[in-house]
Image 1 (cartoon, rainbow, N blue to C red):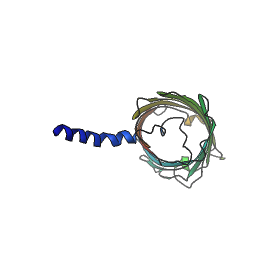
Image 2: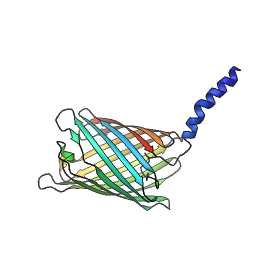
Image 3: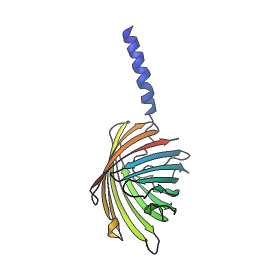
Image 4: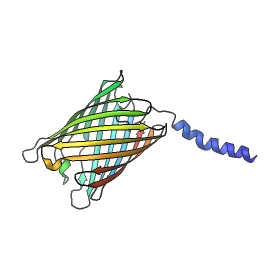
Length: 232
């Protein structure tokens, strides 16, 4: 009798979890992820360092399997200064250039609209465009992204380029991890940066929880964060 009760308890506990993880097509943290057609993605992100907290919310909608539309908003709290406030909504497009072969490639476009805010990054309209390419295997995705960004302003105008390679490892249907690097070169050397990132991801079907830690070489600061991804 005890064995039957124990068996029933184990089945009742683990079968729903296994069922929730049976769908492996919604790995949002994969660097080559594109929101599937007619799916809706919610991604909530938190970022923390010794001097800064930044929260963001992104929504993405898959149009037709080769294009998605994104919208996001951010909030920043500066612990050392009064650079606090919300951004305006940013709009982005991801367009899949190739996906039928082993190599996948996407074009990226984004505009963060100007907002009257004490946060310097939010006070100007920011234009970005980029290209990412990668290849997927059953256990790993290798990808690289190049992105250029411009702010057109007589005083604060700047442009910079980001080179971002990433390796994303899938240990099983539940656990995965990513290691990435961001090399940024700007027209103003004050904004140059090199960032090393690591993330650990737990997947439950269409829901993912990601914890990440980063190190910024220019400021010698560690950053910590978390993200919740839900695909509807």
